[in-house]
Image (cartoon, rainbow over all chains, first blue to last red; front, top):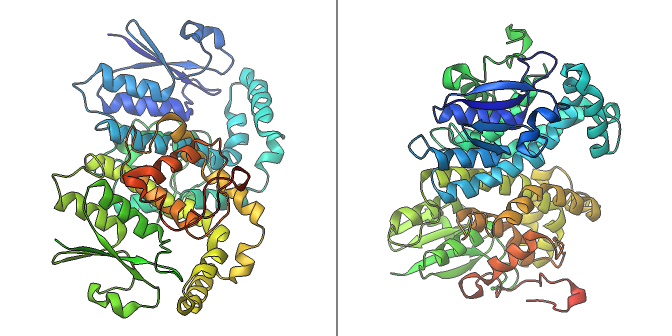
Length: 241
Length: 241
């Protein structure tokens, strides 16, 4: 069965930086489900008009069209009950919903001022005005003002990451001994960063750093082989991955 | 079997405000396990010396002595497998660990400058120097400087609560349709506040407000009947609960 994911791309077709699309790609790999991706840009609304909305990810699974990354993950567990579950039972899903909202409303909020100018620089030229206009309306200022003072934004990120750091000091994955949908959601935020920015977000000694390396290596290096920047500090060598 | 919990108290014996002890009291009630509490003050280290450490909660369950609120919750699920589980399976526990660390490293960190002077005011006189000295060493300034600018602290709390607000807009409890250990951990932080402070932390329209009311009503009103301040804004009537 042909399974197709519409996946946000930058200037290059293989610059895939959407945190929401990364959740779905990792979830599909977790379940061992083959898929192909179609590069998509913010302004290509007509290409996904069949989904009755204007955002990716859009998964086309045979006759089914599913949108919204969380809904897609839940769909996958329901539609493929004989594959590895993304979360083990209703309560594990309920708890993971908190991790999802923390990722979107704390982690990604802290990452946005660190990343927005790098996103702008990596976008397809036809997407740049859309990105600037839509984001500046949301943040209420210019991208340049919003992203000023990088050291303060990195310090704020460090504080926001404290719960994740403590969790990953105690267990290898947010899901425990093996990754769950909660790991894919958090990892999506880090891939958002890695695919468009060379900023080093994490100390090499952080349990979050070691966890991200484990996540990058999963499923034949699905995350790690993607076009982006090295997670290894420049002093250790390594440029674009 | 006699089951005894050493429970932090303030000036009055029934002023029980420890967020960590509240986790355990709610967990014991969740499992339908009877218990009695012993009021304990910060400086009564000798009273719990039998536990080989100096903090509450300490649970004495027959011959077993268990310390650390999270370890006590896990102990209860292991020791009483025929009672309602605090989390349903290893992955639900793993995800709940993130909620625990978020509560301690984000939520309680945001609450501390809102609550510390009220805690000081409600402590037993013999505990006040201990509290001031230990907390000022931790925060690196005076309690008065730390707690200055309450509107800024409330605004910061509002942002920290965003993931919880979004989660509880989608489901009645962090655990889903019914409360789990994750709810008790978060609720402990709100009881810490309610038992010693009249500050209104939440808008009455917030899903977190409605969730807290549900939590206060559980198990015959275990949380709601405890000595503390009303969660209902003063304009609606209601002083100390």
